[in-house]
Amino acid sequence: MSNMNNASAGKFLSLILRHKPEEIGLTLDPNGWSSIDELIALASARGTQLSRDQIETIVAESDKQRFAISADGAKIRANQGHSVEIALGLAPQTPPEQLFHGTATRFLDSIRESGLHSASRQYVHLSSDRATAEKVGSRHGKPVILLVASGQMARDGHLFYLSENGVWLTDSVPAKYLG
Ligand code: HQG
Image 1 (cartoon, rainbow, N blue to C red):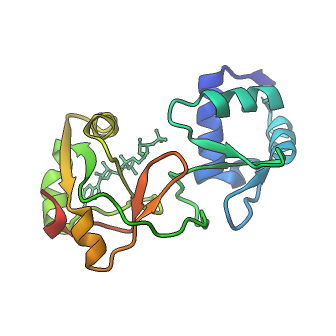
Image 2: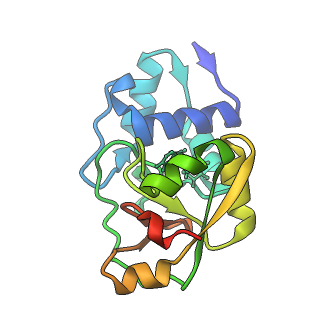
Image 3: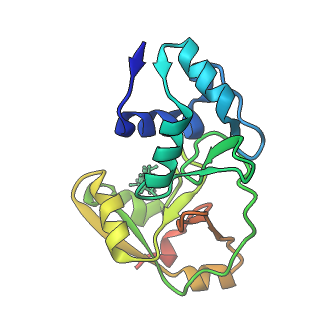
């Protein structure tokens, strides 16, 4: 049995709640929620010890508010970042006129050619501020910030969603909207 520190436990929750619930035999509901008790029990059965207190601490202290606990306290889900198909249940919203996407310079040619695609995730993730985009881009290498003409995209019929933790989501961004 292993007890994880909060950083490792946060990564574990991201893995299970966004990408691979099957890794511990967990099934997410159609909106991405999992019972906290079931998650703890299944993780424990596979040798990963997490407590409810630790989960609550991670949810409260996550720098990006990556997770949400349901109002009744019984369930948890990731606020964004999923590769598994779930419905966050967000209503489309009108985005600001401009949003930012941080990426790595080595992806630029491909992005200029074919636009922004969500790769393995459900949505392309966009930031309302440059500093956040810079951090997101740095995860992949030498960062570069792309400006997204989100206002024009919306007027042209593209849908935007705002996750509970403030990340703008859209299916894809055609190259003509990138500056
Ligand atoms: C790039 C983190 C080549 C795209 C972050 C990105 C975010 C292309 C990478 C969230 C491309 C995908 C998401 C194309 C897109 N050709 N490369 N046509 N279109 N790309 O990790 O946006 O900390 O799936 O630019 O903070 O980096 O996990 O997406 O570089 O909010 O909570 O393909 O994940 O949140 O990478 O990050 P990712 P992302 P957490």
